[in-house]
Length: 261
Image 1 (tube, helix red, strand yellow):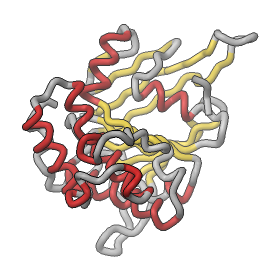
Image 2 (image 1 turned 135 degrees about the horizontal axis):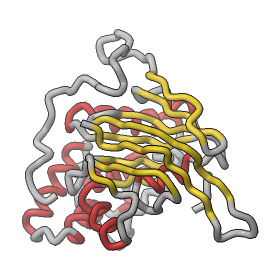
Image 3 (image 1 turned 120 degrees about the vertical axis):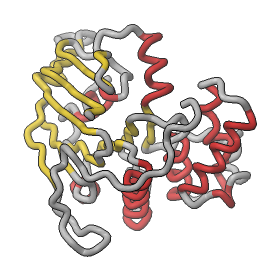
């Protein structure tokens, strides 16, 4: 099943002195369970593309299907509901609330989804355990490292069992060692939970660690290729990137679930 289908997507910004085409005739399919990167230089349109994928903006033309549902013409309230239940976000700047504990930050999406306090605390502790931070549940964000903070953000992104996780420059504020650890964490979670993960980055070394790289330049997708890298058993990954092999997964079904840069 495809989580994402973009058909002839275009995006033109008209709130400027002259209309600016950020994306033009973009076609993209992302299957359930994929772990891919979208890469491009500043001004390429990759951030606009991420905003469209994340339902933070709407296309000017074309059709966007999320989990088989046409969402490109949805109104703001409909888009907000879909974002809350179907999409998890991981940001470069972490976006944790310093007044809340680590576990309180992970609970936030569940609060907005109306989940009861006992159930959301249980889910948050489970997710912190998944990223190796259960023993940091009561810490404040300023008491943990940058790499740990991003892992908390990843746990938060998984809270509502999303169909899609969008990671926008998730390693941008981290050193090389921490960056590699975060990508490995995302890969492990992709394998163990079956979550579809899209990493948006300008860094080819980060993109190469995913299974597939989509390159955006001047508002167009100019390449879409499977990556060859060593798997856990030391063998190159040669699987079809559009239909990745699914691994045994944890139960992800329980509970409730603008400018171009």
